Structure formats: C-alpha cells, structure tokens
Length: 202
Image 1: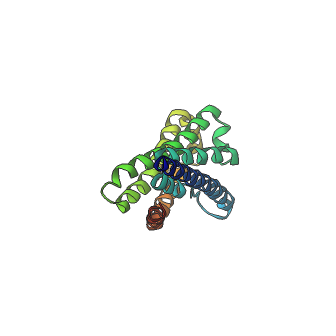
Image 2: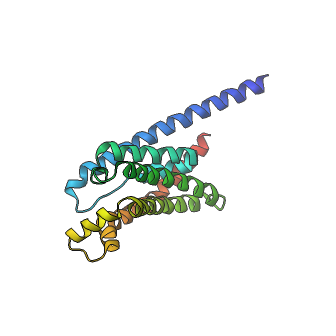
Image 3: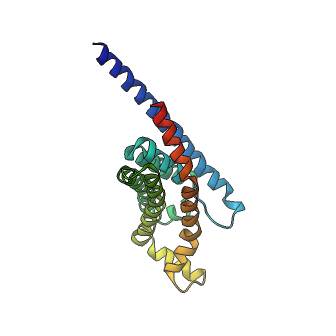
C-alpha cells in the first residue's frame, strides 16, 4: 500500500513538474517570437529565436511537448501579424503553412532527440538543434510552392529578381535560417546542462 502511495505521489509530482516546464517553455517561445518581431525594424533581416525553447522541450519533455511548443510558435506568428503579407494573399494557405512548419519542426526535434540521445545526450541535442530549423524552413518553402508561387513570382519580378528561387532564399529564408541554426548550435551546451540538472533533480 505504501509503495503504491509513494509511486502515486512521485507520478503526481513528476506530472506537475512537466506541466510547469511546458508552461514556462510556452511562455518563453511566445516572448522570443514577440522580441524578434519588435526588433525587426532595427535589423536588416528577419530572425526567429523561438526554435531554441522548442529544442529544450524536445530534450526535456519529449516530442509531444516540442510539437506543442512549435504549434504555440505558429499561433504567435499568426496573431502577431508576422505573416500579414501572406495572409492577404491566401488565409487558409498561410494558416496551414505557419502552423505546420512550427508543429512539424517541434515533432521532428523531439523524435530525433529521442533516437540520437541513445548515442549520448550531446549528440541528441546537437541533432535536434540542426533538424528543427531545417524542418521549419523546409515546410515554409513547401508552403510557398503550394500556396503562394504566383504571388511570390510577381513579387520577384517587381523586385527585379530574375530567379524566383533565389528571391525566396534571399528575401525569406537565407540569413534567418543561418541565425536559427547558429542560435541552436551555440545554445546546445546550455540545453545539455539543463538536461543534466533535470536528471539530478529527478
């Protein structure tokens, strides 16, 4: 009877800890996206910082949590007006693309961490940190192809760009992708440290 009670209490505490962690990471994801949006007028390029807490969620709580954080990231992008230019062109296409790219980036980060961490913790974090921005960018490019190609082609022509592909890379993806990847790489040791602390507390 005591063992059952102890296990129940332990599971209850573990659930509460996980719930608290998810709430904190969700708040960080939202705040980082808002910070990126506010800082945009002062920078020559777009930045996305929200993939960092998604990778933390993948490592600490698993793919379900990281998928949720990616979804929360997508909701914040839509509500903040960050996707306004695309919403004026195709509302359903924008919603699908934005939510899919965040959610799938989170899911991929969680699944890859689960597999790669069997080698060791740092390798898991490293792979997860690489996969998140690749999937986020890849799904965005797919969304552009499916829903916005005609519009982007006209934007490219108006900008005097002879190649639509290079216009997409230079205008929407290039530097942002490198920053996402760089931030995740730099922060990987921090994530590993958080995992080690969590394990000691557990």
